[in-house]
Image 1 (cartoon, rainbow, N blue to C red):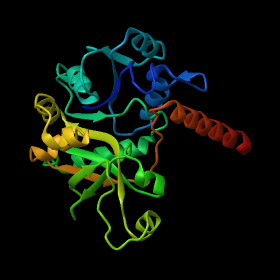
Image 2 (image 1 turned 90 degrees about the horizontal axis):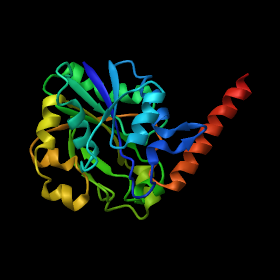
Image 3 (image 1 turned 90 degrees about the vertical axis):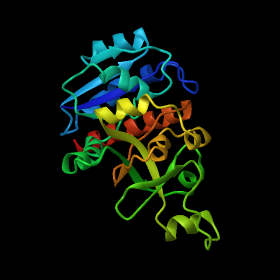
Length: 256
């Protein structure tokens, strides 16, 4: 079974109660769940929560939801806790709870490599950077990969360093620089092994847990996507998501 898991942590430092943040009359976690259901490859979707209020909200809109300890340190740990006793699960998809409008096709793109190649243990997504703002911000990780699309490194700093470029605008116009999109697909056993391994040096330095895989010699397949999603981490991001929804609604009304 291919199981999509949406980890939802209530006590976000930058946006308290983030899973329940209202977007167009629905909590954000419901938007993420409904968007994930558009995937054609997921067999089931589970929401892993750490707070009774989120649990009750998820139950209310009909989701399969599981309570996890509040002291788990990451979304990966929350997912591993939620799936460890589910014997029918073969592949686990980590769908960030703060991606309310994630396209189902994007999720499927990340899953496909594990279906076609049994040697692939982990897959994720990347998209070509389009703006200087994306290039400069440390909140958007960057990724470089080899000619077979296996990750070489992830960083919050722009990589690779383009020595000949005179400006950031020149870099993104003349070179392919990729941002990492945080959808992960794991074989269940590698996820459980990962969460039992202590954080590694580069992971701690960059504050990027995917580096733990690379430091332990586990390859990550990188799928290039043309799809886009909106991540909500701050009150400003929430305003942007609301405007995005208004734009969608206006477009539908205009079509009518």
